Length: 261
Image 1 (cartoon, one colour):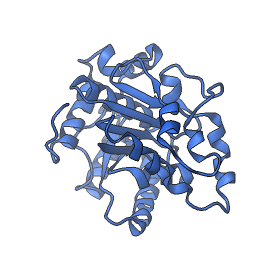
Image 2 (cartoon, rainbow, N blue to C red):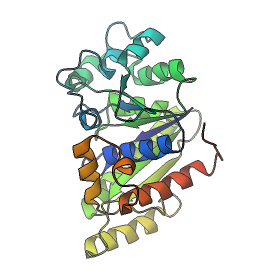
Image 3 (cartoon, helix red, strand yellow):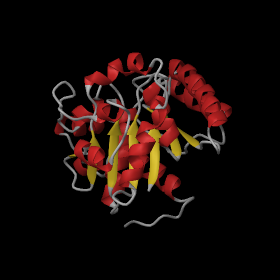
Image 4 (cartoon, rainbow, N blue to C red):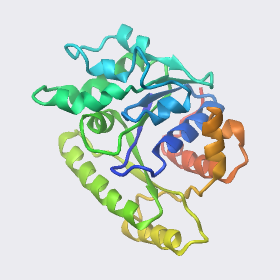
C-alpha cells in the first residue's frame, strides 16, 4: 500500500482537485483507493456529497477518547463515494478544535499512521488531503505518507507558500528515519499570462529536481466534475486537466514499477 499526502501551507492551490483527479485515474486502471480528508473545511468530503457539519462519524474520531485506534473504529469511519473503487474517510468541522485539544497531549501526530496499519491489505493507495496550515493534522499526513505531493499555483504568492512548505519538510525529515520524497505540481497554469509563465520558469529554476513535468492547466472541467460529484476522468477523460494528471501519475508510478491489481 502506497500512501501519498497532498499538502501546501497555502490554500487555493488545487489540493482537493489533485487528490480527486489522481484517485480517479488510479481507480480507472484497477487500483483500490482510500481517501482521507484531514482539512476542517471538508472540501474533499463535500465533493462526494457528504456534509462535514452533519456527519456522525469522521476522521476526528481518530483523535477522540484515549487515542487508541482499532480496526473496528477505522472501518466505522469509511464511507463510499461515487466510484466503486474509491472509499473515503470524511472530515468534520470539529477538526477545527483539534489544535486546542492537542495542547499538552502527546502522541497525536501518529494517529493516522496507526489507522492505516489496519487497512494495509484492503487498499493499494491512500491519498490524504491536508489543511493549508502546519499543525497536528498536517503533521499526521506527513508522518504517515511515503510521498508528498505539493500543488503550487503558478503565481507569485504561491511561490512564497512553497518556501514555507519546503522548510516544514526539512523539519519533518529530522524526525523521520528517512527523507520524505516530494514532488511539486504546478497548477492553474495559463500560458496566456506572463505571471503564469514567469512563475513556472521560477519553479524550474529553484526546484529543478523536484518539479513535475506535468503542468496542470486552468480547466473548467474540474469545476464541472465537482458539481456532479464525480472524478474528473469520469466526466471528461479527454480534457487537458485530466491529461496533465495522467502524465503526473505515470511519473509517480514509474519508479516503483507497480502494476494494477
